Length: 180
Image: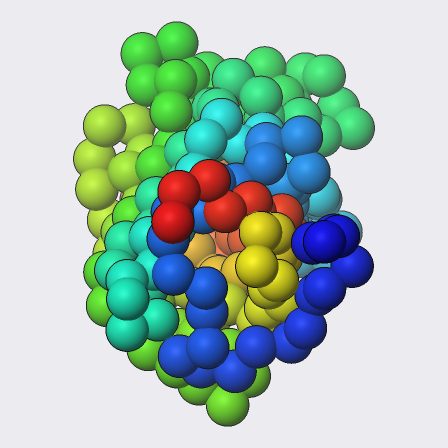
């Protein structure tokens, strides 16, 4: 049986039971911010690991995604070094950024979660919308989006008129069922 070709769009409560692992090689995190109120500055972060647990009732019971703070990459090497520094991510002392889901509820387009993100060793609330969920018996994909107030999470070295206050986060993830 070829599981790679059995993708179907799933509705709420129609997820395959088991432990799903994010594939770091096929998962991207994109962060965008406004610079000087006009220019959109994109950057990426690499995913180190991630798991999603689905119980026998097809409910999401846990989600954890870990990103590498040292992997922050934009088109500007000086910016990359500055964002990784203690002024922003403090990647030398806090090499991981971690998202954990709290409650996960179904929506008309996918899911919504009230979770938390840990940045620079401190944990803050973060809401994510999860859409474009496609799952087969062994693999799947989804997109998660959020808006993060960088001042609220302590990534606030420069004023908001230079770098916008809102960080737009998009995660495009590929997952594989590793334990049923």
